[in-house]
Image (tube, rainbow, N blue to C red):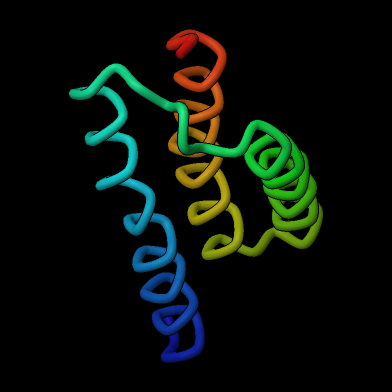
Length: 85
């Protein structure tokens, strides 16, 4: 692993982990009223596209970051649909 890949993995880790506090807060409070359905819908589509790009380019940092981000963002999208306020 070279320095550029390490930088990519680190950047991906920080941006992905940034969703974790929101997921935990939404899960604990059982409220997603302040989350934007439109924003998370478009965001998830974009992340799927980045994931596809990463797979096609065989770029491990892009694949790893977007796969984990998709899991967390999709969780928030699920909470938004599940926890009707």
